[in-house]
Image 1 (cartoon, rainbow, N blue to C red):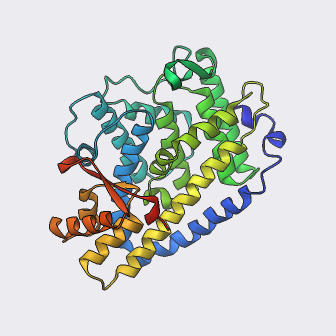
Image 2: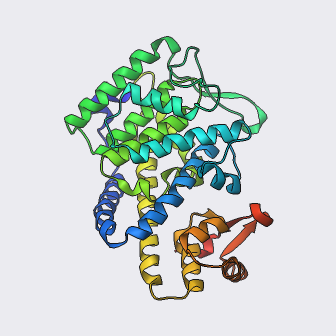
Image 3: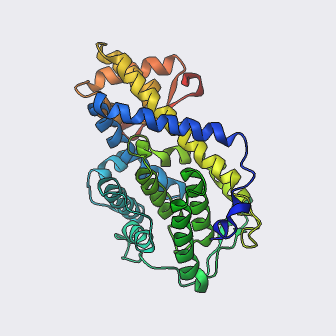
Amino acid sequence: MKSFVDIAQTFSGQPARLGPLLQRVDVGRGREELFGDQLPELLRTLAHNARVQSIRASNAIEGVEVDDERAERLAGGARFRNRNEREFAGYRDAVDELMQADPEPVSIPLILHYHRLVFRHVGGRGGSFKSDDNAIVSYEGGRRQVVFKPVFAQQTPFMTTELVARYRDAQVGELAHPLVLLSAFVLDLLAIHPVADGNGRVARLVTARELLRLGYGVARYVSVEQQIFETRNGYYASLYESQRRWHEGEHTIWPWTEYLVGALAQTYRRFEDRVAAQRGAEGTSKQQRVRAYILHQAAARFTIAEIRRAVPGTSDQTIRLVLNACRDAGQIRAEGTGRSAVWARLPSAER
């Protein structure tokens, strides 16, 4: 809520470097609309891959790890076997509902509904505000350190309700660029920390929902959560910087805003790279299409199962032939062996 108390102060002094990032994202949004009619099959493949990556990455940010093979199976509806898989399945359900429903304005019931979905397979303990005070802690160096103290539990319902109302008023009044307003809203939501557990995941679900509602549909085709996972040090550092003196209303939203808009700009770049690679692969051999996917379309870490879906009708022998060639060329490396192996693209392969 604090970011919306003194609007003039909060949104003054926008860094000059933020302007080009916002322009880059808005240009990407315009181009995205053109691809819907031109490449529907590619968009369906991208949407499927983004779904799995989003579910896995958002949980991994919070330390809820599921290996790639199990992630594929759980995303397809396999039954869960442990607590991590139960939380994975809950986030899967939330993502599926988010992507299928018509985006509605953010509200308290919506926030708590996403929390309920995330924990629906873990004893049904989601869907309500926190009842005890909580803290954001770090264990860096092996010592527990309180990084930030959120709003007291007693104040949480009021503060969250005020935040939603002020955010929606700022949107109606067009008081800043929609992405700047969204960044301020997410910053405040994480500072309030309205639920006992899963605040980060709920905030990322709300972020994706708002992006879709605001017309930034790239969240369907390239995982924003995966981009955050790959740059999680920047994610935490920018939040820490922007939440300093938040309780006093003397914080600055700009470090966090720059991070979030930059992550979205990179997501659009990935989206356009994958569309360009698909266009360039038309009329080429399956080996060439697999190579194009590995180097330009896949996430930074990918599995053979993802390649199979992206290049249907390609044998595992062909896929492994291309993987080995790219590995020998220093473009990728294998992490693990056998069915659970994950492949990682190396910096030398990036554009």
